[in-house]
Image 1 (cartoon, rainbow, N blue to C red):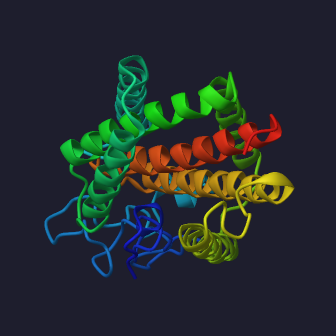
Image 2 (cartoon, helix red, strand yellow):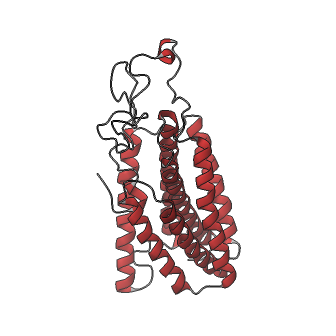
Image 3 (spheres, rainbow, N blue to C red):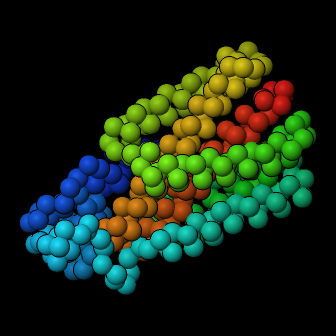
Length: 292
C-alpha cells in the first residue's frame, strides 16, 4: 500500500516493515529479511547476489548461536552511507535556510518554496528507487521555507528558532537513546498506532485550516492558546515516533544488507521527520512564549 503523503509513503511500502517480530528460521526464503527473496522485494533480481539470505541454510553464524548480520559486501548499505547522505541532505536544508534568512525573502515566496518541496517529496515517494538529485532539490526548497518561516516566528518570539533547533536536537537524541536501549520497541503494533494517530492528526489540522479560511482566526483554535500547546506537544511526539521508525528502517537495512542506494531513502526519511519535529517545536516554543 502506498500513500500520497511523502511523510507516510516510505512507511507504507510492502517491504518496509516485513521484518517486524520475525525470527530467522533456517531453510526459509525470507526469514524476516525485507531484502531477501524475490517475493515483494523490489531490489531482488535472479542475478542479484544480495537477494538470497546467507543464513537460509543454517550458516556458520546461526550454528554458533550468533545473531545474524549482513556480511560485508560491496554495494550494500552501511551506517557510514546513511550518515554521509543524511549530512548532505540536512546540510542542504541548513544552507538554504540561512540564505533565505539573510536574504529576508518574503513570506509568500517561502510558502511557494514549501509547495515546491511538497511536490518534489510526492514525486520521490512514488518512485521505486531514490533519486539523489530529487531528494537534494526537496531539501533545498524545504530549507528556503524553513528560513522564511523561522525569521517570521523570530519577529514575534525573539529566539524561538534557536530554541526550536535545540529542542529538535534534544528530542532526536532522546529518541535515539530510547531506541538503542529498547525503551522504544518499533514493532507492528507501534507502527499501526503511530500511523493511525498521524492520519487523525493531519485530518484534524486540515479541518482546522478549512475552518480558519472560512471564519478567520485560528479556526477551531487548535493552534493557539493552551489547546494549541497541547496539540503542539502531540505533534512533537508524533515526530519522535516517526524518527524511531526511521531508526528501525536504517537498522534493518544495514542488518540485512540493503542496496547502497537505500541510504538516500533513509536520509530522505530522517529529513522529513526532523523537519516535522522542528516545525512543531517552533510553534510550541512560540506559544509557550505567549505568542500565537
